[in-house]
Structures are given as C-alpha cells and as structure tokens.
Amino acid sequence: MSPGAASSQGVERVEVAASDWRDACQAALARGERFCGAFAAGRGSAPRRWSALFADGANTRVLSTVPTRDELPSIVDLVPAANWDEREAHDLYGLRFGGHAPLLPLVSHPSDASSWTVPVEGEGVFEVAVGPIHAGVIESGHFRFHVVGERILHLDPRLFYKHRGLERAAEGRELAEGLAYAQRACGACAVANSVAYALACESVLGLVPSRELRRARTLLLELERLYNHLGDIAAVCAGVGFATGNMAFAALKERALRLNRDLVGHRFLFGSVEVGGSCLAPTPTAVDRARGELRELGQEAARVWREIQFSPSVQARLEGVGVLGHDDAVRLGALGPAARAAGVSMDTRAASPELWYGSSFAAAVPPGATGDVAARLEVRALELVEVFSVLEELLSDPLRADTAGRDGPPATIGVARVESPRGETVCVMEPEASRVERLHLRTGSYANWPALAFSTAGNLLPDFPLINKSFELCYACVDR
Amino acid sequence: MFVLLRHLQRVRREAALPRRSGARSLAIRHVDAGSCNACEHELTATAAPQYDLQRFGLDIVASPRHADVLLVTGPVTTRMVGPLRAAYEAMPEPRLVAALGDCALGCGVLGADEEIVGPLDTVLPVDVRIPGCPPTPQAIADAILAGTPPPARC
Image (cartoon, rainbow over all chains, first blue to last red):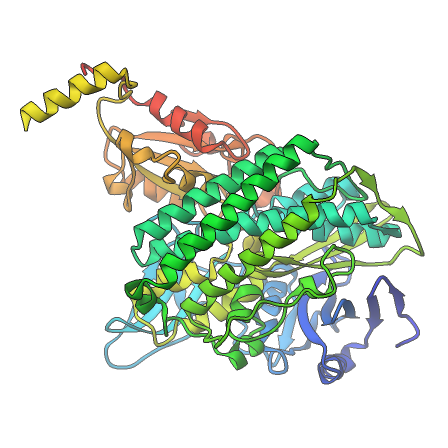
C-alpha cells in the first residue's frame, strides 16, 4: 500500500504515478484481482483524474492517477474489458490512451460511419444498418452488421442514443438527492442501481447497514430479479415464436409486477431505497398475501419451464446459437447470467456482506455451461428457483423500518458492487462535503455489451434478435 | 358468415359486454427518445394476457409508414431528436402523436440540459398525453382507447 492510501469498508484507494499506471494495473491482475470498471473525473479547468477498479471478493481496490497532459498508456491489451471505459473517457473527458488504436468514438456520434466502425472488406461483404428505432417495443440503439449472405462477420453496436448526462447532472447535488439519478438511469435495474448508490454513500458517511436494512434491500433486489427473469424468459420464447411460453411467462411477469405494487407500493419498486435507512415495513396481511402469490408463481413458472425444456422444436432453435465461450467471457469481462452460462462461476451476491445472502449462496452455473442462448435461458430458470427460496426466507420474518448505524471513519470514496439481474453493477460516488462531486455507474449491461457483439459473429443475421434477447441487456443504464 | 356475425352480435348484447370503443383499428409506432426503459416494459405488458390490447384493434407496427399513432417515450435526447423527426415525417396523414410517460411530458426530467431537447411537445404536436412514471398498462390502454374516435354504430 502506498503512503497516500486510505482503507475502509473493503475499499482501498491507491495513488499511482502516471508512469507506473500499466505496472500497477498489471500487478493487480497478477494478484488475481478482477477489473471491474474505470472512470474519469475532473471537469473544465480542473485536472483530469483516471481511476480503475479491481475486485477481490468483497474488497475493491481503486487505482487513481493524474494523466500527463491528459494522456496515459492504455491497458486494453492487458484488460480487453476496459475498451469501452477508455473510449467513454476519451469522448466525455478528452483523455487520450496511448496504445489504444484506433480509439473509436463511443458516446460521441460522428456522422461518418467509417470513423466508428471496424473496416470489413471482401467479396460479397455488405453492411446492414439497423436502428436506432427498432421494429418492436425496444430501446433505441444502432447496430451495424457486416455480413456475407445471411452470415454475420462482425457487429459494431452504437449505443448512447439515450445519453441523458445523468452522471454530470448529479454532480453538486446533496447525497440523498443524487439517488434519483442512479435510479432513473434504468427502470429495469432501478433497485440494483439505487442499492449500489446507497451503499456507496453510506461508506462515505461512515454508516453501516443494519440487519433490517440488509434484509429489506435484499428483498427488493430479488423482487427486481424475479420480474426481470420472468420477462427475459418470455422474451426468448417470443424470439423463437413460441407463443405459449411467451404468453405464460409474460402473464407471470405481470403478476410479479402487481405483487411489487401490493407489497412495496410501485410496480418497478421505484422510491423503495433510501440512503441511510429503509422504511419498508409491509403489514402482516400484505406479507402473507405475497408469500402465497410467490408460492403459486414458483409452481407455475416451474410447470411452464418444463414445457419449454421438453419442447424439442424450441430447444433446437436455442442450442449452439450466439455462443460465448468461457475464455472469451472472462477476457471480455462478461458478467451475470451471460458469464455464468459460459461456465464462469461468478456472482457478486456471494461476496456481498452488506446484503443478506447466506454464506452458502453459490453462483448458479448450468451443467454443461455451453454459453449459447439455451444456456443463458437455463441460468435464469435456475436462478428463479433461488429467487423464490431467498424471498420466502426473507418474508418469513417481519420487516421493520430501520436506519443505518454509525461505525468507523468515513471513506474518502464510496464504491459498491451489487448483482443486478444482468450482472454486477458498480457505483462510485466521490463526495465533496455533503454533495456529490462525481457519480459513476458501470452496470451489468455496460460490461456485457461488448461480449454480446462478439458472440454474434458467425451467426445468422435473423438470429440476432434471439441472441440479443438471450442477453437482454438494457440500453438506458449503459447510455445514462 | 353473416349469420355467424349476427349471432355474435346478439351474444355480445345478451352478455352486456362492453362495446368496442373504437370504430377502427389503430396502428401504433413506438419511439424511445431516451426513456429509462420502464415505459417500454409497461407498453410491452399491454400485450400480456391480462390486457391483450390487440383485441381492441391496437397493434404495434414495425414501420412508421404503417402507423396512425406515434407513441413516444423519454425526454427526447439530442441524439434521438433526428430519428424521432424522421419517423414522424415518414408517417402517412392523418397522424396522431402520443406522449407516453412523465419524461415525454417534461415532468420531473433528470439529466444534463445540454443532452436533452424535450419535452416532446417542443419537437412534435402532441395529441394524447399519458402521464405516469411509468403509466400502468391499464392507463396506457385507457388513454389510447379514449383517443380513438367513437364507433359510428355497433
């Protein structure tokens, strides 16, 4: 640890000289730590800072440096997963990364397509442009497919059509006010983003979540995972035209959303997470009703899942499509169900002492872990079983409103990692007095998009919607 | 065929089923102009068995060229205002524009000023307003059905 380092709540901040940047990152990787995001800070005339995050179990190491004349060596050759982070920092903060060539625009949208696509040439190679507006009810984003016939050679995704500047807009707000910016980054990951933000703020305030707080937040996270997974299974069924599965799971998702409204007060659980406390205290009647409904949902989901599993025509459309292998998943930094389907046994819930997952919690990795659409679907079905059992355990004890206790010195930087339905979401909050100086969200979707694009190569163009649905990533919390 | 239809009409009268509120069907094109995705989840839910909006003749269509209604979510970001206008221009007339959700209506929008152009009515003429964060599938269904002209006869 360097002399300037401060350690608190599993977060260690280390200042690194710009010239030692690559060595410091390499040393972290050599210790077995996992890259989990990078972010720039410092606007206007203030000097830019560049930080990379490395995870080791529940602990996070923040390496920070001040680039020389806004330039520093890239680490994409060491950590391919840092590709989008560096490109974003270039577009939004003007940082340059030596060795990252070409440094294609990510958030910026230059009109010349050659400036942001990878050149693909040869006989019979065509470009197919899709979006930003899609045929169904889908978020906005553009895909540039390079194809020969129906076969995809390469996909250049272009997102950030929905960039709202949420991180910038949160700067200067009171800590409690900043929560809304993290939450509204994404409707479908609202709880994961909010819990990550609340935990980051609490570590800065020197607060430790009480037992009640940990239980309430875990309940909300699992309710969010429940409706997302139900909806994701419905979407994959729709992707192969299996109306029975689609409608059955869509109906189950709607019931889960109504359960959220009855138990928590909002279908998407908005406004249910606070910094430093929880006012979630459902009445015994509401809890009983929810437990009954959850039991029914669990039985019904299992029943329809069996129908999907034993429908050969459905399975034949899922197997071998959109394969993301184990090594590629690790190399590209895939997270969540996408990584577990590829056999990467990683789930941040197993390393979340500030939440309420038992010590026996283990990542759900399907047998075989083929990394294709079938495996990604199966991970969700496996996780649903887990979700129902965690929810039943949490609801079998009454939940009471509570506040976080004061404990230990406040950290200088708040970092929290939370498993969202799409993978680990990392929230960084740097305070200035009682206000947000820098807020950064790196969601599970952000980490997985490059892996999704990679997994499409070699597949048929008409299978892209299916592959896309099997990852079911958000655009909103990537674009922010 | 006509015998069957007359029979169906009689059965509906006897069962006192609600009359279809629209004389025609409506083709809807959705454009996400920077939403948080919650409005999309609720719009998708209108096709779930509990609502099944298609039975009222309301269909989401793939192209704005086939659409009567442009249903817009989100606060309208700088990067989506161009594609949004292009979709509107591509629609045949007469056409309606519906603002779905508080962001599109300009209420409680979060974000940096320089990234947001909206609310929607500063970009396109808005005919139907559907408030909510997000509006429930029921609210979406009610608003769109109320926006369709009453039946000439049933």
